[in-house]
Image (cartoon, rainbow, N blue to C red):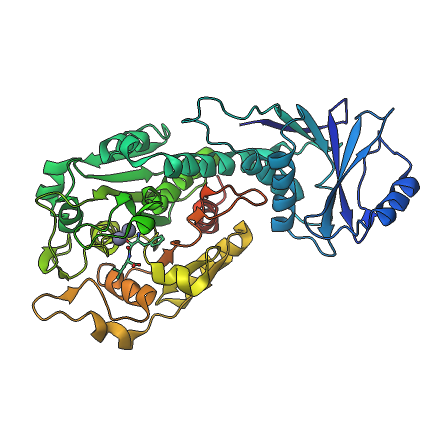
Length: 477
Ligand code: BES
Ligand code: ZN
Ligand code: ZN
């Protein structure tokens, strides 16, 4: 990651300043160019400072040869700042050093927003490129008299978590077989204790959903349990992430176009991994359990057949009528395992249903919960983290849609309300533990590049999960 620090404006290749309501909102003490002249120029260029507008101005003789004016709109919030900062680092990679006063706006934690946006916008996934586009950018300085290290450090931990998730999501399926990604979990942090169940241990423990989905794959499954247990923590939150490293649909096979992006079907597990790492880096005082079942959903000769019945870890049986509805099978085991520890809250996160993407579009995650208090906690956490989540109802009356003729339930509902019937199935595995389900089928993967987001794995969910852990954490003693 690039270096981000705070300090005085020394020489840099570019100075980035915010413009609000058509006026330069903050410049630096060391560098006061003729603002009147600049504002006349802004009028001439019809630069009103609306969100996303940018203008390069040559400033010979100043400490930076060029200045970039960035519009923040009439009213700025933290997410607006992250996006503005992300646009800068994404599009100004030809400059080696960038100084900025973007954080000189009147909102709380402006520096952490600028730092996070800058790091996320500086992302690149070049592992498989022989000749990647060169990136000159190495450092961003937030111009300030005050020491902003605390805010910057917090953002660094979160950015590392998001980058980890993006890298894993973008990695091709054949380079992230369950055993390989389980090893990544083991290597996350010394503060995180990791247990990995191999195929024999999965069978012995009774993780029947994970085993069922794995039947058609040559690569064996792994169930990973990560535990972060800092001293002094009294509350516990469990995160369960869907880790389908490739979803072909199984025998209920997907059409080719629908399969193209299905290496990203482990975005939920990636979010849990990124969040666990960030939470440990931040030394939050809360116990966190991360559970990530990993498998491919393939079509091999012993693949799960429509009509087969599996038995999950809590003993409940499910008739599998569509093998492409596989996420709920592996989450059934993950959730049943999570509630054994009696955590205060369980949050699952999954690229679970196309129906949720149809309902909310590509940028908004669906949140479903029976418990209003738990739902509000997670909605508020998402909002303060700057990730868009919208609550969908848990409709008890739809339970009849998943009744099976021969088992405790079937794995698909009817034609309508697919995101909700999926949640109804999951609810069978959480008992009375407060539980929130996040369906990130839309935002888990970005369809296009904009502000601090790049086409591909977005890392969506990492920030919300960290924010949930923050909400449940205690002051360090
Ligand atoms: N991984 C998919 C859901 C998905 C679709 C995620 C598009 C991201 C983008 C999931 O396993 C799936 O295929 N679900 C089926 C469920 C159906 C068979 C009940 C779906 O949504 O079509
Ligand atoms: Zn599927
Ligand atoms: Zn899937």
